[in-house]
Length: 121
Image 1 (cartoon, one colour):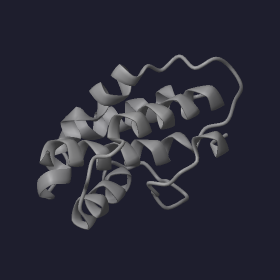
Image 2 (tube, one colour):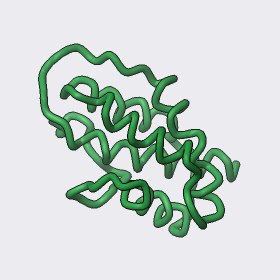
Image 3 (cartoon, helix red, strand yellow):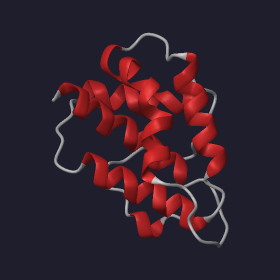
């Protein structure tokens, strides 16, 4: 159950990252790709410390993949589906929220679990 909670927090990070891009096209990013890119981040969100190279690489890759509004909304919806009903702690949420910055990705907004995927442009 702890692993699932951590995955939820990681997904929230990516959900927030997805809101940075603009464009119009069909979504090309799958839920499997989203989860795959974030799996190396689980240990960091569970334990803190320094994110693994693979974690930051995954975050940066996913950030670069979401180039259109449909892609960003798809990432958002995948994450929300994957984490629905999974509990997480404030500590996990804080670590996940700090992941983009630790990986050199600057997000101009707060990570929020109640993000409306339709509002992402």
